[in-house]
Amino acid sequence: MLKYKIYKKSIDAQWVTFIHGAGGSSKIWFKQIKAFTANYNVLLIDLRGHGESKGMFDTVKQYSFRCISEDVIDVLDFLKIKQSHFVGISLGTIIIRNIAEIQPSLVKSMIMAGAILKFNLMSQILMRVGYILHRVLPHMAIYKSFALIILPRRKHKSSRNVFVNEAKKLFRKEFIRWYKLTSDVNPLLRSFRRKKINKPSLFIMGGEDYMFLSAVELFVQRNFLAQLNVIPDCGHIVNVQAADHFNRISLGFLSEF
Picture 1 (cartoon, helix red, strand yellow):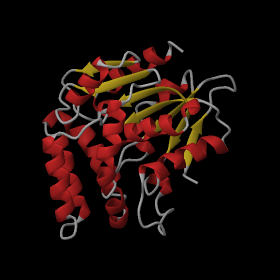
Picture 2 (cartoon, rainbow, N blue to C red):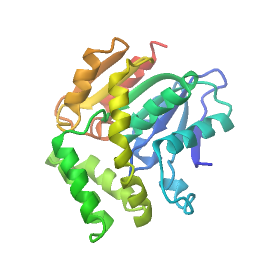
Picture 3 (cartoon, rainbow, N blue to C red):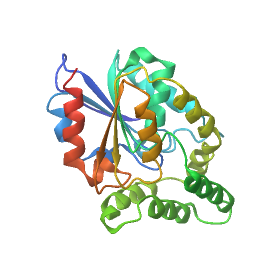
C-alpha cells in the first residue's frame, strides 16, 4: 500500500486528501498543512514511485491511471475514510477525476489546481519530443526542460525548483513508467471533457498557465457544478507560488460544506 501521512483534527472533522502530480511528492503541500489542519483532518499520499512510496512497485512493468487511482482508494479504504474532499495539482487532478468516476461516493468535492483537461499543440509536441529523447538523454535533463517550458518566467522560479527537486528523487525507470502514461491520457481526458462534472468542483489556475488554462475555462462554462478562480501573475504550480491566495480560495470553497 502507498505511504501516507495523517494530520487528525478530530473524529468529527471532515477529511481532505491531497494528491500531488507526476515527479512530485506529498511534500509539495508544505504550504497548505497549517492552513488546512486548523479545521480538517488531512491525508497526504505519496503516489507509487514517489516520495516514501519510492521503490514499492519495482516488479510492475507498466502503469495505468486505473491502477494509480485504485492505489489511492485502497489507502482511504484501509483508513476507513468513507468520504473526503480531494485537492490535486497538475496530473494529480486527472487522478482525482478518475477516482470520482471509479468510486463517486468517496469524493465529496474536488479542488483541482493547475488542472490538466487537454494538451494543447505545444504540450503534445513537447511530450512527443520527450518520448523520442528519453532513450538517449538523462531523465532529469528532460524533466528540467519540461519544468522550464511549463514555468518559464523568473517569478516561477520557486515553484519550478520545488518541481525539479522532488523529481530528482525518482529512479530513471520510474520516470519512464510514468512518462509512458501519456499514451493513455488523451482518451481519458476526452472522456472527462465530454461528461458533465458530477461533484462540486473548484479549479484554481494561474493566469500564466498558458498550456492548460484555456481548456479549463471552456470546460467550466459548460458545467454548472464547476467554479474557476484564476490567480493573476501566477504559473502552473499555484499552491506553491501563490500559497496564501490558494489556501484562502480553497478553504472558502470548503467552508460551503
